[in-house]
Length: 298
Image (cartoon, rainbow, N blue to C red):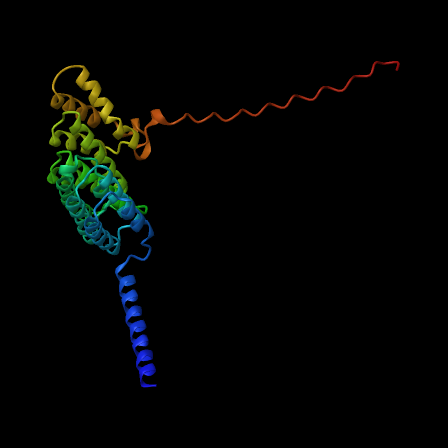
């Protein structure tokens, strides 16, 4: 009798311990571990490496990174031959970026040689942090976000410009020119200005001349199409000969000499607007035919 009771107690204790172990294991997993688990099971990694990568992957999910993004990063990394240690370091960069409230998309999507991927991701994370601070300052100075996602897109565009060689102080000057543009002081204009500034630098223009040229266009209230067209206009200046700096100077002079009325209200380019159709002239009513005069004698 005592033996049976002892056995029963032992079974209950074992079951309770097992339940606690399972509960603890579940708590250690992300809410939806399927995708991450399947990716790691299919990965060509040693069991030890899978344990390390899985732990950091779970940490990334807990930090708020979508599980699909984490699984995709691991799958791409393994496919490109990134070593497990570098893969763990890359996930660590992603976790730190997320905890700093930085956009992690640019960090996740890096197409660089495996040997440099952690270095590049770390540098990009730093550029995003600088950009985030700049965008927050721009918002305090009057630049407003009019739609969901504009702030993040502006942050990524500014970070991209910084990564292409535009110093933060040049982006700060550009931001202030946007802030001074009144009703046009929006995050979408800052995003556009950062994108085109980076493009002009890629075309050979110095960061200062690039930001000044785009700033002149923003200050004059040029439309999105016109600001995007600065790349083509600079290309035309370069084809005519001379240095990129001289071409940019001529371009700025042309922008500043244009009259606002030449571009229509609020920076709309009249050349891109379809002419309004003239109102149809109402047809004149035909005069009534005179009644027939009866001949005498009828």
